[in-house]
Image 1 (cartoon, rainbow, N blue to C red):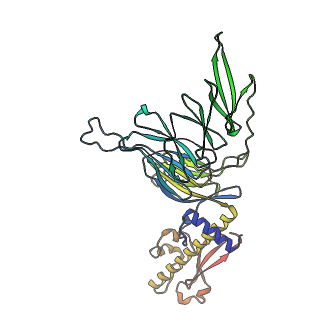
Image 2: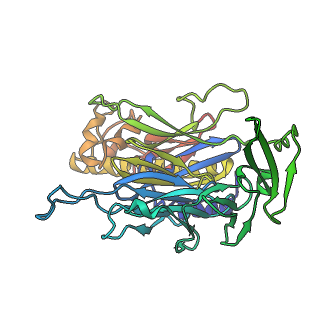
Image 3: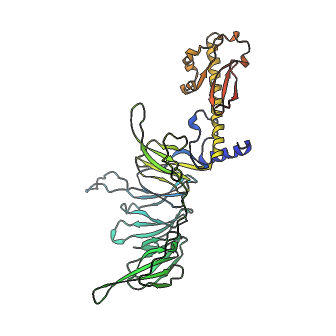
Length: 446
C-alpha cells in the first residue's frame, strides 16, 4: 500500500480532476465509481449538463478532449405575419473541452439566415483543429469551408467555397478538390500549397499515411476502350510521378497492436419497484486477448454512466470524458485514469472513513435512545426502534447490533470496553462501544 503522503496526493489529484467534493463521505455512493482494465482504473466523475438542447449530433476529435456539438434548429412561435407557418430557428455549433469541462458557442446562424447550418467535415490527424462546412440559407451560394482551432476556440473566415476535403490518415493535412483548377493541400496551421495534376485526373486516396496521394484519370480511346492512368503525387513538393500499368499499390504499413480500450454499451435495465426498463449507459472494461466477454456481475468490470440514455454517446479517445444525449440535451462525466493499486488504496480509505462515520452516528443514536428511555439500551431484536434517531435507514441496515448483555447502562461494568455492535469495512470493522465512542479493529479475514 502506498505511504500516507502519496495516497493523499493521489486523492487530491482525483478530487481535483473529477470535482468530487473533498469532504467526509456519508454513503458508499460518494466513493467515485471506477472500471478496472489491466493495471489501470478509470474513475468516473459526477454527471454534468454539457449543453442545452436541441442537440443533433456529437463529433469528437480523434485525439480526445474536444467534441463539437451540432444543435438542431429549434422551432419558434408563429407570428402574426407568418402566413405559411413559423420558420425554424437558427442552427448552432458548440465546442466542449473535456479537461476544463467548459462548453462554448462557436457559431450561430444569423437571424436573417435562419436556415443556415454547419457541420464537421473532418479532423486533422493528431491535432485539435477541424474543418467545418457552412451551408448558407441560399443553396445557390454553395458550401463554405472554414477552419476551427479548438485550443484557441477560434473560427476562421471562409477559406474556400465548394471544396471537397480528403483528410490524410496520419498527417495533419487535408486535400481540397474543386470543380475546376488545381488541388490544394491545407495544413492544420492554415498553411496551403497549390498542386497541379494532369487534366482530368482526380485524387482517390492518401498513401504513406498522408505524405503522398494517388490521382487517377480515365480516358476514352479512339477504339472506344477506356484507359486508366495513375500518378503518385508528393504532398510536400507537388511532384507527380506516373504509376506504371500493373504496378501494385504500396502495401499499407502494419497497424500497431491496439491496446484494449474501454467501451460504452447501452442496455435495458429494470428499475424497482415500478418495473421500468430505461436504456442505461455503461462503461465496460475490455476482456483480455481471447477472453470471454466481461460478465455484468464481475466486480469493477463495468460502471453505470447514466440510467437515462436516449441518443448518441461518445467516449473521448483520450478517456478524458464520456458524453451522451438524452431527450435532446447533452450530458457528460469527466474520466481520470490512475494506477489500479493507487485507486484501491484510495477506495479502501474512503470506505473505511464511511464505516467510521456510520458507526459514530449509530453510537450517537444509541446514546440518544438510552437518554430517552431511562438510560436503557434497546434489545437487539428491536433494533428498528433506533430508526427515529438516525437520518437514514441505510445507516441502520449497515449496523450489526451484537450486544447481548444487560440493557441498563449502569449495569455495564466497563462501558469503554464493551462492544455494542459494528459497521463492516475493508479489512476490519468500526466498533461502537457502550460509552458511545468508536474504534477501528483490523480483521485479516475481511
